[in-house]
Image 1 (cartoon, helix red, strand yellow):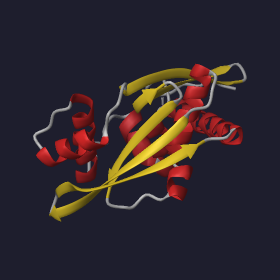
Image 2 (cartoon, helix red, strand yellow; image 1 turned 90 degrees about the horizontal axis):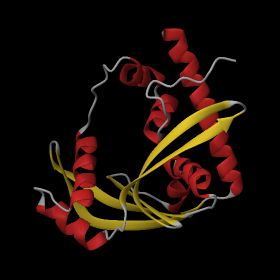
Image 3 (tube, helix red, strand yellow; image 1 turned 45 degrees about the horizontal axis):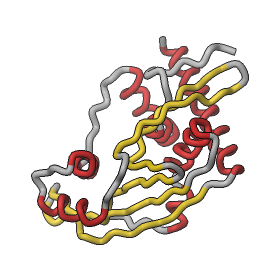
Length: 197
């Protein structure tokens, strides 16, 4: 078997999700650096994340909602680890919205309502669970916080003020399934990457 090679040298959740949903766009972005597709929702999500991290924004509504709904000890906490597949190693990189020992919070903005089922099945939390178990040797509790948005004018997205919280816990079986999924995706990306270059 060929050595696992990844375009960025590591696998992140955003890479994994893009590969699973649209391999063509993944190749454009990570193989060739040509995909510059950005939606208004993506721009707003970035603006919201920056407000949480810095406590600053030119959008007073974002600041108001952020200050009343977030009080994180460690904002955008970086986790690096390695998933092993036989003799091969797959570097993993995560940026958690917030992290305290044994507890992780993930923030989401968007119009589509989140439900407990959707939160339980959200792959990003499973991906983070794998990284944290490898890094710390223990399971963590997750909280997904949804900040509802609406588009009041064409391209003008804002927060409605509605915030819902979903608690999520991952089992050992969830951990094993996600680990297998990570290995499968990493091998697929590596094979496509080596065929291309």
